[in-house]
Length: 242
Length: 101
Image 1 (cartoon, rainbow over the protein chains, first blue to last red):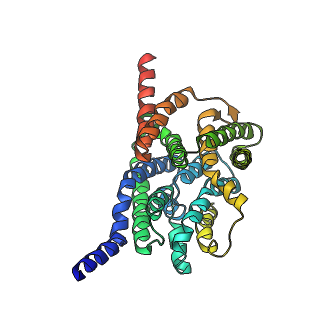
Image 2: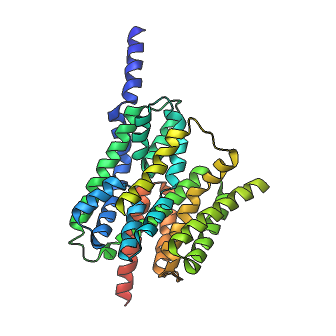
């Protein structure tokens, strides 16, 4: 009996450990590597130095935002437009952070800061799946998950920056399609996860139409903003009528 | 630019974790926020595939390559497999069109 309890206690604790978090991050490692590598290549080809790539992956730490920032820099966009766009591209983190917040209420201020600062689509996906079976999240486990993703991301970006010099035509390897493919993947995962196909497809179509119209008639960054606000509002409105 | 972009990335990541234990958003705001991910991805994808240099010009290669990518995402539910499929599809498409030309 006592042995059983000890074994159970041990299992619960190892289940919540830092190393378990590292292990649970492994399925996402190749995803980080491929997208991070592509981001490194794009950053390098947009004229950034290796030191700038390191800084960008450590400070910004956001796949699509790094692609977009690099792309907008090459296109000669002003810093305000880039910051504005990055803000809205990453605004989805607000939802993810909000969604996991109830599981970490027991933690002090700075621990919540460190969990949030390293939150990504991938670590959120892993964490949300795991936390749904629990009432409290483990800080150690979450840190193992987050730090593994963070270190991988840095390595991938630097590797992309280094090897990007020798890859003269990244489009030959389809690297330029990594970003749209990632958007398709994230879209489909959310669509499947939510299983609200009717409303979600309507929101998606509205967003596509408004993004194109907004981009053509106003600007690229405004197009995304207009599309998000109007499409999400249409979603709420349609749900009200159902 | 980088510091500004990093700051506006950090704030949405951290703020909800810090304040949500104190403030509760009204129901309508939560429902509105729930539509944001789908809307963001759709809008960004539309700009990638349908817009070029600020005007409406669908990329035929992009649209063709997107079809198998949607299918792979649906059947594998794996982000990695989806991104890999996208790169392979685009690489194959370009090589095929070189042979044709």
